[in-house]
Length: 315
Image (cartoon, rainbow, N blue to C red; front, top):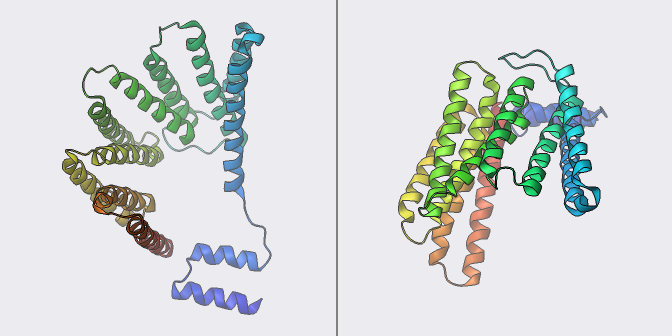
């Protein structure tokens, strides 16, 4: 035991492992309990997704036998009970970050939000109240989710709100008569800029400033995907490739000084994907193509691991 602890201390002093890694490994060596909070959290959220997915499948398969009344009543009862629970037990609203009400509270809020989406989808599919204008449903859902996210300080519901808003943008663009491929890229870039701007303004006004990371991550991914889709074009890709490289440089400039590894990874992965999509056009032969991906892929992983380790030592 003494030898193991001594070596762990030496590794920490030499920078081989970070202080956090040293604490974790030292605790394991002493036989201390290991926290699996994150793993349980992920499993519980996955369980809610599975439950809602099963609920949707059941409704789709057996709605004729169950009847519209029973289906709508059941769904309404679920999300009403969930929202009643949250509003009756939630703490008072504050512009600052508020303490979590507990795992059960967050899961109930998440379940109620997803069930609301299922009921809206069922209503429009069965009764066509808005004649297939899904953009109106998505906008209303986004507004509700934004309200719930800020009312109960929940970043996961905020992600649902931003996703619903992205869907509303998509359905709006689908009505444009112009080139759909270009239109969707334009909408995606506009969406990412608006989301980033909204997150910045709210942070500067100190309204849930800890939400800024969620806004920025979603905006960055949408922007990168839009630029990457332009790079994949056969014609006119040079402008999109240049824009992608500029975005990668901006992501690095943001992530490196702030030690935010996700933005460094975005720059590396999306930049690699964009450059590779053009490089492989000039590679002939399956062996050469496989060699390219093996060599460059291993190099990319090695670089990201080294950066992650450096960030860990500096944290």
